[in-house]
Amino acid sequence: MTSLTYNDKWGKTKWLLGSKALKPHVPDTKPFTRSGLQTMLQRYPSSVYFKPTRGSGGNGIARIERLASGKYLLHHGEKKRVLTSLGSLHAELKRFAGRRPYLLQRGIHLLKSQGKPFDLRVMVQKTSRGRWLSTGIFAKLGRPGKVVNNYHQGGRIVLLPTALKGAGISKERRDRMKWQLKRMGTHAGRCFDRHRKGFRELGLDVAIDRSRRMWILEINTRPQFYPLKALKDKSMYHRICRYAKQYGRTNGR
Ligand SMILES: Nc1ncnc2c1ncn2[C@@H]1O[C@H](COP(=O)(O)OP(=O)(O)O)[C@@H](O)[C@H]1O
Ligand SMILES: [Mg+2]
Image 1 (cartoon, rainbow, N blue to C red):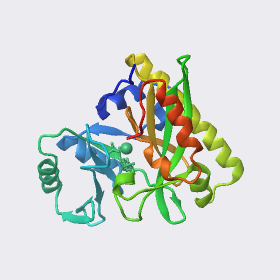
Image 2 (cartoon, rainbow, N blue to C red):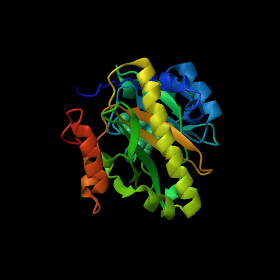
Image 3 (cartoon, rainbow, N blue to C red):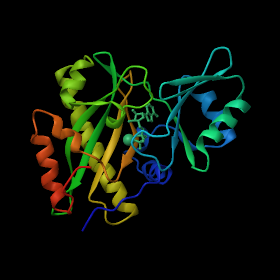
């Protein structure tokens, strides 16, 4: 009755890459190895994300940048460190990861809404008839200069139109983006169904870059939606709860 969970970000990335509709929205991602690190920093010197394969809540995530000097900047939480060579960077990342497997992902230069970088959450749920439906989209506004925008890390929740308006996007474009995001959600649901039975809800973390391209940063199989309760307009929260009840989920934590 409950919805299946699956917390392997690398496994889920490979599923998405197998979907013709979703592949163009998946940022280049590799398992963390020394040669992977070298390749990714050559391709995306301005930002590579370093994320635990089984992480959540924005924990254990760092951002790496290759500086013009050829050195590397490692940014984690409030801390920044400069490493002078690829070898020392690799050693530092290995120490940081410990035994946890890690991924490298192309960093997306997030669009800003009133000066704050944001990413989106697209909530998709199965109806009682077994059809995927995008039931809510909201934005997580981060603080400038932070590595992650998760709610737990001080992110703020606003509705999609508010975030897009704050990014200077026209009404017409906002409507089209909303439609595209909803479609991404249902595509993701059908994609996951092709690999395993039992998913009833998914939460897509989507980033929009400066050229307004949309990227799926990850897909959560047990997405939290209780932060929506803090909004004055609780209709989205109630709608999501109504669908969640059908598969026995009674809170959004
Ligand atoms: N490739 C990326 N480019 C830009 N920002 C990213 C990238 N990957 C993650 N982030 C930021 O870090 C946050 C957490 O990353 P995510 O992959 O969702 O891991 P978690 O499972 O910990 O939530 C995202 O919501 C986003 O703000
Ligand atoms: Mg996330």
